[in-house]
Image (tube, rainbow, N blue to C red; front, side):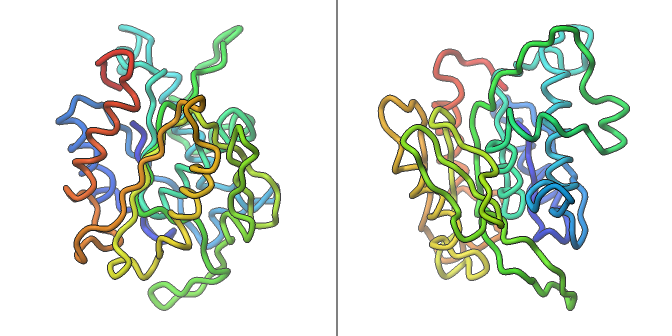
Amino acid sequence: MIIFPGGGYQKVMVTKEGTKVAEHFATLGYSSFVVNYRLGPLAFMSTRSAHVGPIVNDAAAALAFVRSHCGLGADSRFGNLDASKITVCGFSAGGHLALCVCAQDGGELRDLPPKPDWAERGGEKEVEDKPDPPPIRAMLLIYPTLRSPTCWCVAGGLWVVPSLFGERGFSNSGDHCTCFGASGEAMGVLLPTLPQFVMCATVAGDMLLPAHKHSALLVRALEKYRGEKAGGDVRYAHGGPFYLWHGVGMHRSWTDQADKWIVEAVHKEDKTTI
């Protein structure tokens, strides 16, 4: 499992929405990688497009690192892990990053070289005639950020944040869900075979990212094309107690559901761990 913590694009909640999450899933037999991605006022911006920048590039490097080190046997520290069972999990801003990774996997992200120093030192290994890696197996989005105002005021500072998935947001064509960038360009697609677990906090507990402007938009688009032939499952966890606020981190109100869901979504054919 690759975990992207949140933090409002200002910081990375490595412990609360990172290592604590990894510790929880470790009790269920899962191996996890927590991504401490770069930040900055224009971290999501680049000269190529609004949705590809240092943060998304870090996500691409993390995914490449995990894929290249799994399934190599004794030659790798993670050689016993199965690269065909990679799940991504993102919280808040990290949820937006996780969705970017899944939507662009196999497309633009594959063309971006790993940027962080750690990825350059121990990142993807060169293999002749390397086959395409298996797709991401499942995705968990926990109170994700899917849209934002143009400007955010945080801790007294003001900076520009792209509108993430823009005004068009998401649409479906019957066999996939398209995610649109801030300028209206198609930034990637979510295939119907990708199982997804989307959790949002209660209405009273999440005034920052109300569900009808974030999680619900994605869920509605996914449900429009979901069908028996799609093979994907969209689980929407919403409601619960008023203390289920944005940034709650690990909480039984959703972890109990997620634990059962991930077994069904990832281990349909066997019981091996990720």
